[in-house]
Length: 174
Image 1 (tube, helix red, strand yellow):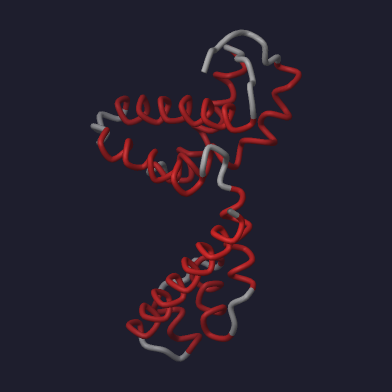
Image 2 (image 1 turned 120 degrees about the vertical axis):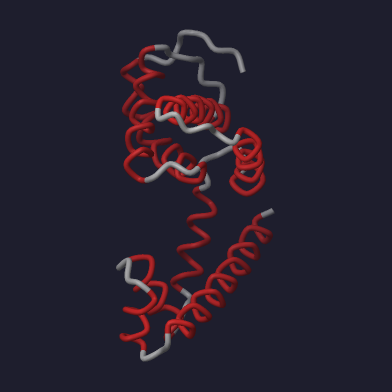
């Protein structure tokens, strides 16, 4: 992708609105905690504001922003004297491209939302308690009257069900 000065700060709000969530999710996927992902997402857009680029397409822009974010993530690891596992980052990039394509993974999130809405009973409750409320297995077990192992099995089965549902939805869109 050729980088040149064309994307102006007046377009920055639109750029952020369109790509912020995708950049943040990508940084979390690479291993940044929430706080670091917040900071690096902001730094990514500040960097682009300081050094504008030519926007060829939404996919190319998303790819460029991921590259900027990835480089900022690597620099943050080096500043904290943590050695990045380059091989793992390269594998992570490949997995991201395989499942999210060149965009920001919004189609996958839509599929996930649809699949979660289709859950019933304890599976739905367990997902809500675990991922929305942040409860531990023991706390979920008390609420659902299950052992911790029972909660672990329920969550594992439910995640597998969600994975298959998402993959089916994505395959039907091809």
